[in-house]
Amino acid sequence: MIEQGMFSIIIPTVISLLQPGNPTGVHTACLQQLLQIGSESPVHFKAVVAQLPPDLKEKLETSVRQSASPAGGSSQARQTQATSSTTSSPQKPQQPTIQLKMSFANFS
Image (cartoon, rainbow, N blue to C red; front, side, top):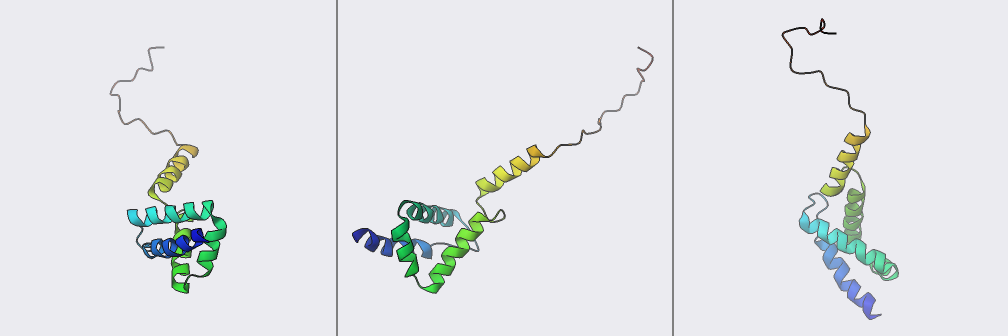
């Protein structure tokens, strides 16, 4: 019961620091902390979230959804996605940028 009491103070405080429209370093750190609490103590986390006011629930849901979407994820996730998309697609060979003035076709 003490653990749930601590979470009932910590979780709303951390959620109030979230900034879904403008994810900053503080936003990312708070979201990671909330996800860690939720994964380590899911029963207590769900109980506290169920008692939250609707505005804090919405803020939490929006932040989690934005971090899960490809456009709203962390910069590291976006870099990983960009890297994998460029390496997985076949690249067209580029035309040479240097033009030779002399033809070497007769040297065979």
